[in-house]
Length: 440
Image (cartoon, rainbow, N blue to C red; front, side, top):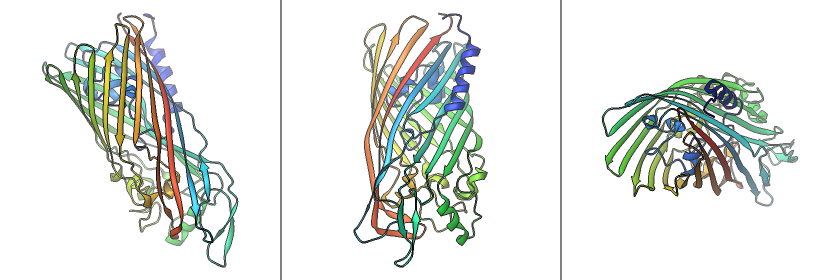
C-alpha cells in the first residue's frame, strides 16, 4: 500500500461525494454529527481531540503534528421517519389520517480528507464531505375526499393533495485548511470553503395554486426538478493545551451566504434564499492516563437566523416572499460526552452520547411533514484497528431512538384544532473508515 496513488484516491472520493453528498437528515437538525468514523464513534464530541485527516472538517486547528495521511470514510445512513394523523370524529381535515411513512430509507454518505505537514509548526489539508441534508418521499396515494367548506368537497390524493410529495436537499463542502502552532500550547487553523447544495420539491401543487390569491407567481414552488446554489464560507479553529492533561478546542463557521434557488423562489422565503446556518463547537479533552481520554463538547447551530428554515410556518406573507414562511426551526444546542480508550497497540475503543433540543415546535408540525428533523438523543460507539504503521481501519455506529412531536394541523387556510399530526423519526447509521499514513 505504500505505492498508493494519492491522485486516484482523491479523484475517486471527489466523484463519490459529488454523486452521493448527504441527501438525508443528518442528526442535529439537518447537520451531520461528525465527519468520519472516528468522530461519529464519539458522537462528534472530539472538537478538542481530532487526530486524523478528517478532523479538519470539525476543527481546522487539529491537523498539525499528525503526519501526512489520507482518510476515507463511507456512512450508510438509515432514517425511518413519517407522521401519524388523527381527526376527531365528524370533523374535516386536509392532511390524511393514519400512519404515513416516507420511503427512501438508505443513504450512502462519503467523505475524505488529506493532510500534509509543511514543517514542525504547520500543516495543510483538503477535505470534501457532506454537511447535511433532508429527504422525504411520501409515495402513498392516500385517496380521500377533502372538504373545503361544509357544502364543498374535492377529491384528493397524496399528503398535500398534489400526489406523491417530498423534498430532497443535499449539501456538500470542499475546504482547504492551513493550521499553525503559535507556540507549544496554542494552534490555530483556518478553512476557506466552497459550499454547494442541490434541492428539489414535488407534490406541492395545491399550495402553488393558492399562491395566486396572495400575488405570488405560480410555477416556482414545486415539480421543477433539481436546482442548485453555491457560496463561499470559512471555518476557524483553535486548540490549546490548558494543562498537561487538559486540552481546549473551539471551531466556528459563520453563516454562509448562498446563491438563490431560482427554480424554487416561490417556496423559500426571500425569493429562494437558503443560506447555511452558523455553527459553533466548543470542547474539552481530559487525559486520564496514557490509555484513556474523556471528551466534553457543546455545539450551537443557528437555524433561526435563516429565513427559509427559521421563519414561522404561519408567517403572514406568502411562500417565497420577503418574510414568508419557513419551517419554523429553532436554534439547536447540543451537549456531548465521549471517551477514547486504547485497549492495546492495535485496538482503540470509542464511545459517545449527545443530547439536543428538538428544533420543531407543535405549531410548525404540518409543514415539517416534509422535514421531520425531530431527533434529540444519539448513542454512539466504535473502534480503530491498526494493521500496520501505515494503515488503520475505523468503525463507528450511531443509534438515535425514536423522537416525536405533535401539533394541530395548520395550513394556509388556517389552523384546524380537530386534526393533529405527530411527526416521528428514529435513525441508525454505520460508518467505515480507512486511514493511510504516507512514508511509513
